[in-house]
Amino acid sequence: MIFSFNFLLAIRTQSHKWTVYVRGATNEDLGVVIKRAVFQLHPSFNNHIRVVESPPFEVSECGWGEFEIGISLIFHNDVCEKQLNLYHHLKLYSEDDSGPQSIKKPVVVETYNEIVFPDPSEDFYARAQKHPAVIVPSLPVSFNVPFDNLIEKKGDTKDHPLNQWFINFSEADELSKLSAARQQVQAHIIKLRRQLSIVDGPAFG
Picture 1 (tube, helix red, strand yellow):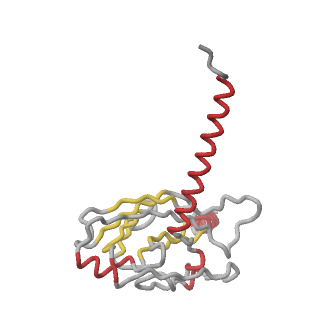
Picture 2 (cartoon, helix red, strand yellow):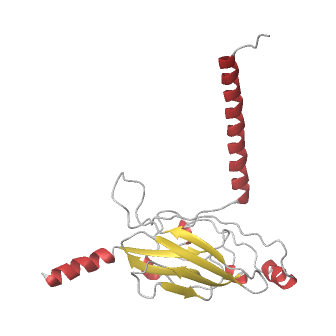
């Protein structure tokens, strides 16, 4: 019974392979900006504080539970003296309950954060200019990249094994969404004003 229990426990704790990463929205080399990334995993993991000194800034592990991961980004000295602390909730299970979870299509939850450096040094600016964005189209969904084939790569993420699942972030798309949302809000305000004017009725002196 003891061996059976341990075997079942091992299967449960190794149910999912996952990767948490920090990448450029357009696959640029974040090593130009980030000197070090520190990932704080759940205390149940061995060595739950993981320090990554060079790109790709990511950690891969196996487990079964979802939890919040703390991420600290330490920048190069000529970029910013303060570190940036982020938090990301590890998501292992899809929100779609219509059928069994596919082992060919991973659950991808990416969060877009924009960092502005208002007064970049000349060295930092020159270094960043030499590492432009790398736009790479997503591969067909039918193309599968096994986790066993994950290879650590340096620099940009255009050749990352998980690239096909990356979400494409576009500044133009974001501005378009904001504009559409603003128009919806303005239309809703106009509608509410009309309803209020009907309820209040004409004013009599």
